[in-house]
Amino acid sequence: MPRYKVTLAYDGTDFVGWQRQATGASVQGLLEDALYPFENQRIVMTGAGRTDAGVHALGQVAAFSLERPRDPAVLVRALNARLPPTVRVLDGAEVPSSFHPRFDAASKSYRYRIFTGPVLGPFEYRYAWHLPGPLDIEAMSEAASLLVGRHDFASFQSAGSDVESTVRELFESRVERKSNGARYLLYHVRGDGFLRHMVRAIVGSLVEVGKGRRRASWIGEALAACDRTAAGPNAPPDGLCLTAVEYAARLATQP
Amino acid sequence: MPRYKVTLAYDGTDFVGWQRQATGASVQGLLEDALYPFENQRIVMTGAGRTDAGVHALGQVAAFSLERPRDPAVLVRALNARLPPTVRVLDGAEVPSSFHPRFDAASKSYRYRIFTGPVLGPFEYRYAWHLPGPLDIEAMSEAASLLVGRHDFASFQSAGSDVESTVRELFESRVERKSNGARYLLYHVRGDGFLRHMVRAIVGSLVEVGKGRRRASWIGEALAACDRTAAGPNAPPDGLCLTAVEYAARLATQP
Image (cartoon, rainbow over all chains, first blue to last red; front, side, top):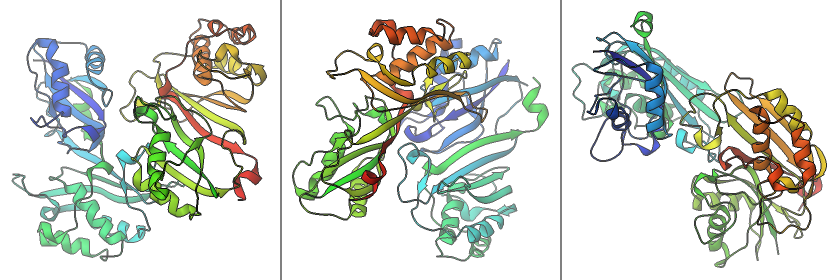
């Protein structure tokens, strides 16, 4: 069966998350509904990562198989015509029939946005955590760098997940002050996989450091404890965005 | 009575426009409701310009008078606490009791955004007119420049307004291709006043030129006709934003 990979952007504000659920509109559900007319049956859409309710994507990747081949450009146009404007298919390509968007991913990249100014604008409030007041960026940067590498991230995982291992490798974990004068702080993280609410727990912990309630080295102690209560609270979902899913070049290009 | 000037930003998508109306939520209505508790009565909020339903603002200006003086910083915080996140008060200041945000304005600036790429992103669709395909920017620029100066803009005014004169002066009227690689086209216009739907009628006419359906010089003919049917259709409201209202320095700064 021919298989297709799509790259997606969505505003997660109004969705229950990526995964299809009975409680409300999901990104997966909307995509599967938009695919339905192609073969008059449910076509399963598998995503690279399950984003939570309120979490956004600029480069989510998903895949599905069809019984008969279709031009990827036609698929992209037809899906966009049937989807709400808050979910867009940016790109489509045929991939090997064995392609799995999650298992084949080399890494995933997330960005978290914090706004520290007094008034968060009407065009930005869905996409940032509003934390007015100063943050110690240097201490946050130091703390963020302690998470790079292969670690057991059990302290940064919410209850309710059933993963076999809580060991993950982070290739990048850094804090950036936006240089254009806007009062934005960005946290960039790239890893081979992420546990449930892991980025939000990391950001919530970094903010504890940035607000001066903890020293930078406390992040290392929280990591070593392998206990969720040792780390900080989860940051809200609004500031989080799945920016990209990276694949080995051969998977991304050749069918 | 002490008088105050506020600078406002809002996402116009979900509003019936600036002006208070019985048919739905308006920006003026929300602001007046937020002001009500200060003196337990309706306090009239006068705006510099009446933005239509769906039109946004980054720098709308409004003014109101109170019976007793208040710290402008306290007013700003209290209003923001009572307003939805789609309407934000960016700044507040005391002004002379004679200040009128519309009559005292030296000029108003609007920006209109057109997206020409194939897929308009989920974070941008509320703020742009999606017109996939090529546009002749040079011809649009030439046409836009013909509108600079003092002219009778009757051809660019929608029915239903009762202004005494349709003569207005434009100080700036230019088309800009965004240089950062994104497929955005911006139209910047600054004038001493604007007729009903005037910017949208200008943009709709510029697009007729950009799509090659009319020559650039046709804009001059449409202007000279002083007849609404001589110009192009109104562009949709989504792409339009009131970016600033300019005042003579003495009015903006001293109470």
